[in-house]
Length: 389
Image (cartoon, rainbow, N blue to C red):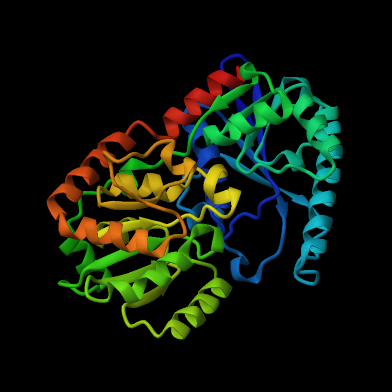
């Protein structure tokens, strides 16, 4: 648990598995790390879930997080290996919230505790026990049982939003008071991603071709990430360069390779998942970076403040991004290039524009690098801490 100068305690709570190959796990740990660096003692509560891939793996080492806070595991009904569909997740989530409720109820000092959730579904019972419940809204779950949303939104003391679009939507749908809202976009560890390693040196370290034009996407291979649009653009960029896809779960990598083979494209390399420590080198090794978010899913269009955008910006490399509100929050034409989401021709044109004006693209990359310095995890945590107090 964490103690501030006024004696307040903070516990961060999530149903996400730690560690995990999913983006939200390191994100939540970075939030905790940033609070701890503000001189705060932090405790993270997460479910005890089994995954053979991460058996015995230390989440701090795996996600490159400084060990300056504690993680406590909560027992849950973990049947997701046997019930892979929504049934297994539902049982895990219900058991997590029930065990959490009794754990909070038995706390002797809960009146001094601030509970910090990363998903309102985790908080729907705990709001009965404390008036000091806050939640980050990373995705906008509008339940079919609207009463559940209204119950949580009325009881939770304050909300932290990573995008303005979701903040506006929640205000319009549920009339949440502006004073209970804080806009706090994602952030970046500039010391890690703002490295000055040259493109040539980065390629030498990674064993990449020296003279090849590399168009890079680094991240998950979910459909919401728009990666299919970038893959479909490959045949039209065969003379311009090679498209590298770095990241993805084992299952998604396999299915994405099948898609690539069906297209019979020769200028696509699916590099697979890489260690967190390697990603800054991959970004610096690229000639340009692509964020192809789809506009067909709200998660990519409105809800996600993509961590990869901030990491891309810190790298200083030219960026081509999908023109969606979640990206427009912090990124504009002075820092990179936009294309119409889900439009292959528009994406191809934007990439060719970058490659035709290397000097102009490099200047935009430098401006993005300078702009992103203000989005540090420490500055974000300091802003949220003032809001909590």
